Image (cartoon, rainbow, N blue to C red):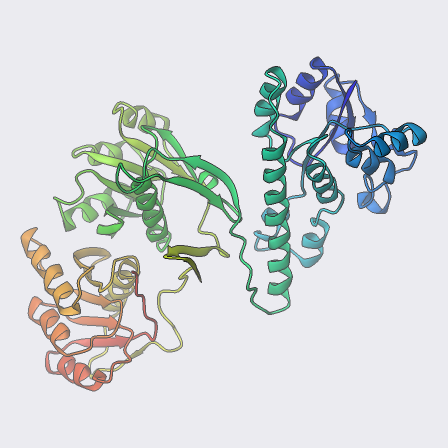
Length: 505
């Protein structure tokens, strides 16, 4: 008789899987929590204690760490010496080890997680079982994820050996787990780690990359992978470019707490606004640029209502993203076959890292979490900004932070009026923003301007003043700051320096 050891924290699908194993001639051996669930569902099994003749101790810290268990996993069925010892000592051999570990990553991601709670979620026995089974892949299969259950049952039916691949998955699983623990201990010790949890936890091959001749895949990485944050509710499969756009939209919309909408194209915002509700916010955002949003991406930070969806439907929108949807809204959106409808289920991850590949290397950096530095932010001109101007400057800087450098944003009353970015010159970006505002009939009189980096020369501020701007916010730090400030004073502009740069390449 074949024998399977099942000890899983994630119990999704395990009852059905155990039943399949029994129908394929397996005897089930299990630990306390999993054993109770399986027994309650009518599955006959042995408990670990029946094999080891020893109870679980230390509050469950020790239950599988017994030589009778590990001998049954590590015995090589092709090794005569091993088999002699098996017969001599009466070891019960295992053909399958199915284990999922305590949720350490999920636990430490909670803001209220205590050190004691984190420590109790460090799995010892589970990691040891996985490692032993993966080492002895020639004799034992190892499963670490419910998604593998169906694949394993199919391999039994077709007598296909997938143990090496399963072992690879297992070692990657525990490596990622261990790195998360190492990083946690570094963090609570006040040190930064030189090792990042960049092991993937999921994989999906894409149709192609940025262009049809390029291969591409999506890897889920870190505490919560892309596939856990975003759920596609409708539409064609996501492309490489779609995923980049969704990520850019998600990071931008997370800057806002009031009802807000952002419209993007090629990962750059073409309109952003706050409003009384998401429909109002969409209308204001769309007015920034009524041409570029065609075939673009729309994201909101509140439940998407039917009236807002109907407003969006006046032009073709390739992707709609929201945290929630009304049922009638989904029914309306689903009428268009090719429109992707995405739901996001997680707030912005606090401990996330940004990864970018370069030729022969990988760049890793902290996520840019701040907008301005409250301690360093100061008014440097003769005129102080009004409260409304300050509010609009901060709004513009939030958008500026997510626009390709050099980025210059014109805004007023919680909405963008002109967006300039991706230009080799900051004055070019400013002129582009002004030109687009005029093109779409938007007045810049009394508006506020944000720049992602300092103005190297007075010309950018002068252009803003000519357009009607009354306040400007930027990091400062140029050798010509005094000249720039003087130009602002000469044109009656209030200028605020933040001390925080927001380059986005």
